[in-house]
Length: 322
Image (cartoon, rainbow, N blue to C red):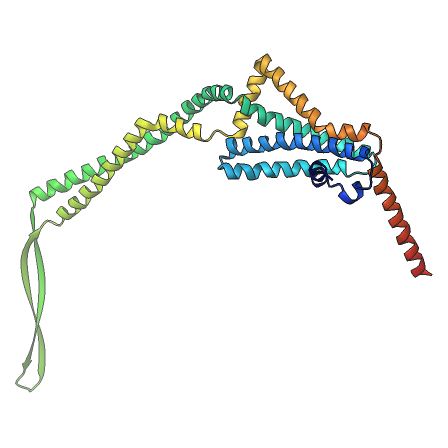
């Protein structure tokens, strides 16, 4: 058994032991299924890699993992048809529906990659519209923030002006402190009496409002820094928004751009339909082969083995029941 047949058995799930006892016709069926599977594996491997690279932004090894994931799904789906013994029309119909969906997904991802530059041009116009809208909103928010800071700065300036006027008029204030001196006196009657003698001390100290002015000045420095920061941010808000919009372009946005391209440009629409038909045909390759081809001796051998096994089980159970 050559490497091609072994590869076909691995991909399709056919038993190499049973196939070794079958004719060349069964090997021919296996070769057709293997060829069809390899075509789908190559297409969906590339599709998965492009999807992961363009829209998920994974490194090359991550793109390879996504590609292998797509390939595994394709193999498992095709095995549902290949390993079905006989012709199950409900299964074939279901597979045709899956093929239609997969053809749409595959052709869309492929075309988004092929039409990449055209989509970028289309997205440039869309991004400018988004930038204009978001810039207005951001500038409005920044203006409100700057207005709030200026209002607080003006309020503190007024307070400081009033406090400074008071400090200039009264640089020092008189601070009085009262101290009680206790003394004990013995009266002629021999009693001890306690007397409190208050003493008032007068000190001249700096006006405490000067410390309030210094605290307000520190707060004003912080507020003016914040005002300058927001003013600088206002100058670059448009470019910042543009960079954000370019960095956050997603799959759905590019899908809308591609839809505009294929619906407004006849050539692009025709190419999409051609590629969709081609991919749909490849997806139905195995289904059509299964539907059109006659039953090969491999399938007959599988059916025969199933009937023999069922008969053996039936005889064994009948003996136990007896």
